[in-house]
Length: 193
Image 1: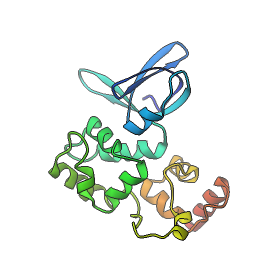
Image 2: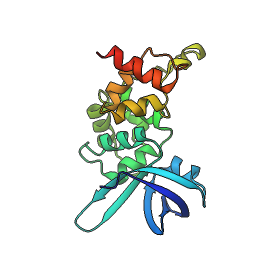
Image 3: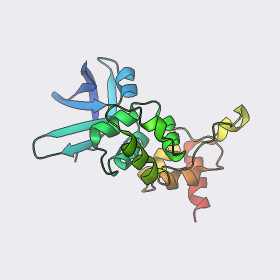
Image 4: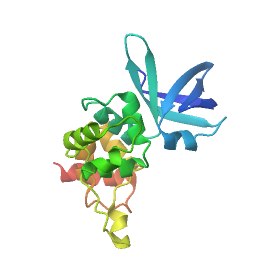
């Protein structure tokens, strides 16, 4: 299994990028946001999901571990393959997609290319309790400092320690975002003892 690739972006086309890793080019399919953010000749690291089928092998890449974990949850849903999961992740920021699933917003999910109404409903039914708590849309600016971001290093650290996305999100609730990453992880772990 290829867990990640780190190298130089040498080509971009369609929804794929080719990452040169010490002379070997890996074609990595990415979500729209990662594709747009990727610059030619820049160094990049993608967490990858290596999808093996009888006829082919594909690498799907993600700029954050949280995006990869959400992708892995999406492909557990009946009728959602890797390409449909990538289309769902391409709908917007990872936090927006996660929040739509947590809020059971099938109308948001159905906007993804190749995802029908029944599949979108299945996604929100199967995953709404697995992606963490929903963030209310009526939160005022004061409450925004406590919202967990998809770029949260503490969240990624907890997931690297074996927490699910849902459990890591719950563990970080109420932990100040003003603390260092190490302090936030320590506080989250202490809260779960």
